[in-house]
Image 1 (cartoon, helix red, strand yellow):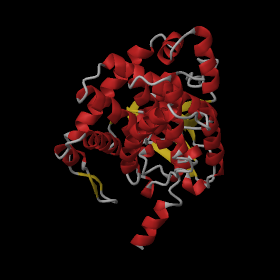
Image 2 (cartoon, rainbow, N blue to C red):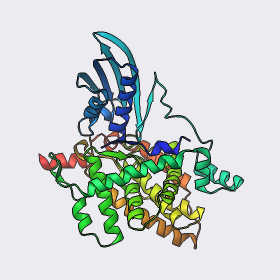
Image 3 (cartoon, rainbow, N blue to C red):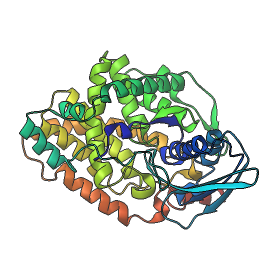
Image 4 (cartoon, rainbow, N blue to C red):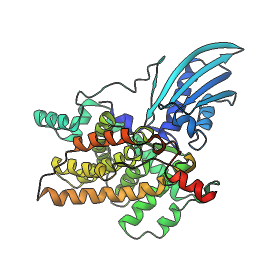
Length: 392
């Protein structure tokens, strides 16, 4: 499996696949061909279909520090392709063939950015449990022994997450004209009285900042960033949990997210929203169970439930914006993560779980592959069609 750090990437919203990844590809190219003064960029897959709604075109211009770019689009390809060719005074530089892989990760045929490097020999949670038993380790010790700088990295990610929520809680006004969507996080926060009230306000604050193109941290994607972010913010500022412990929680969450990334997908364009919100819910449920001192068996059960009840969830953002249903869905999902941790704790004293975490991830991968392309981040079906129907 790859580094847990790859699940927590910092960059501009609203989409890790559609803004962070294209920004990185363009930036790598810009840094390599420093005097290029004109570019041709070819986008394929959902990068082409939702280039405007997801802010892909604007973020590429930002990375290349110019608007002297000729874009072309191929909406028929399945993969999220981004090919880039630079020119200087009419002289053509090499073309780089890039792909957005989900969660902000990229691959470039002509340049190794090390996103695909394998850090862990284990490939699923069953193998991880065997490793823990053989080496008398817990989950955090396992991760920190493989990624020596992980905690220091996660501390930086926490600061980004905290700043995101703060900005979201202190901002008001219109985010999107086409959808006539106004921020509500500040209002939710002002009326908050219970734990759930605060958590929902924090989730909305995160997702609204993401929709506005703010600086964010994936967890494991930007489409699902409101789930983990609201959890750590609540625990720190309402429950006074230390940053050190929060890093442990992000690490535990990351182990389960990594298993999904390895054996299914965390990209909405590949697996639907089950790959994004479903993964984030499983990660959060595992982190909550770990924080509450649950056994490894219970932690796995909580994570399994977090995925199981999102199987088949479609990714069909209206007009390609990461707003409807994404923002509301994040708030619902963090509440469900608490429910999963609670139910797992109650059930584990009574019975064994019939479905393992690895089994549900396998089912998740199967389901994602069976989902129609129209329901995987293309805005060609689902809620998008209903919206267009009502507007017509």
